[in-house]
Length: 225
Length: 225
Image 1 (spheres, rainbow over the protein chains, first blue to last red):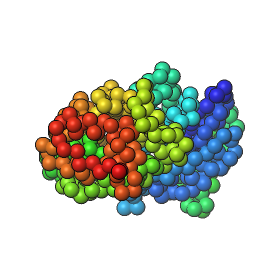
Image 2 (image 1 turned 180 degrees about the vertical axis):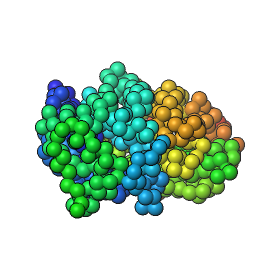
Image 3 (image 1 turned 45 degrees about the horizontal axis):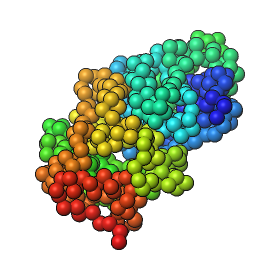
Image 4 (image 1 turned 60 degrees about the horizontal axis):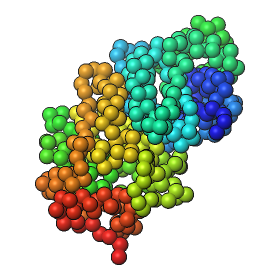
């Protein structure tokens, strides 16, 4: 294989859309990977499809995961309310081991594709409450990749790339704008409706709104009302 | 929760059956986890159900994974032959990132259950060809657990327990016998038929046969012919 290839996790949010555009700009042939993990908001997956269609991607897989049946998060468990204002500590929207499961799948696909890299749009600043978005978590997963895989044993490294990890939402939006990302394709809301309209009041909506305002970029989000 | 609880990976083979019996003997309330990952041999899952029914387990989840569609292994990809004699290096029966995906799910469930431990019956001696069965891989996954989870951040560790890791097949069979495991419930063959009968010639059958012979334990395996 002469082209360098990457598996890119695409959630439908603006971070992963920017991460995908960045990977393509870096010259990677990209294989997009999304998950249907019982998230309440199916509009995320519709957004992921729009994001991928708008980009130059070799293949898009949407893998169904049964994380929802394990319960334990406001994003997958209807018994837990989605918060509408910031809270201290680890948010109830944290899905147990989500990024670990996502990255494990990405690793399996990367091994089969003999890919050089896995891209994930995690961001430590705005999501400091999520343990699996921190740089030390990413370093631990890179170490696991190096030991876990046939590729690693044979001495060829699959790099776990996190180009957004140190950026603020404002900086991500500026970066995405520069790369030509159409943010109207993306959905960030934890409880978007079926048509993809955002609530405007959940943690994720508030971060996004502030990011567009701080970046001085027009906010293309479709809000309810 | 006053009892100590554990998630135990149960494949239907003799290693995981022994590992489960060991966890129960250690006083853990056990939640068994198996995967339908597109393995050719569905008799593995039937065996996993027999193993779990014969043990004192609180709950058994069989999670469907779409690893098979990624291809890349003789165990899930019909285009690759299962080898009938030992080979050097990493076997073609290696499923990309399999243990990483399995452990990621186990971790998600362990977090939701607030479990103290995850048990996996990996074994470094007989499966030295599988990178994700080595002690250094297990240490890397323990490190990931400590950093990945809400539990880890809050200072309570989920221990990744590998009681068989340094044992030979002979020693595992002796240990299982001592714990009262009925090995007739287990299937090890990479290409067992629908009724669970073993081929007797694949790598896994040969290891198992030799293990029973070395342990001086009667081999209850049902072989074809």
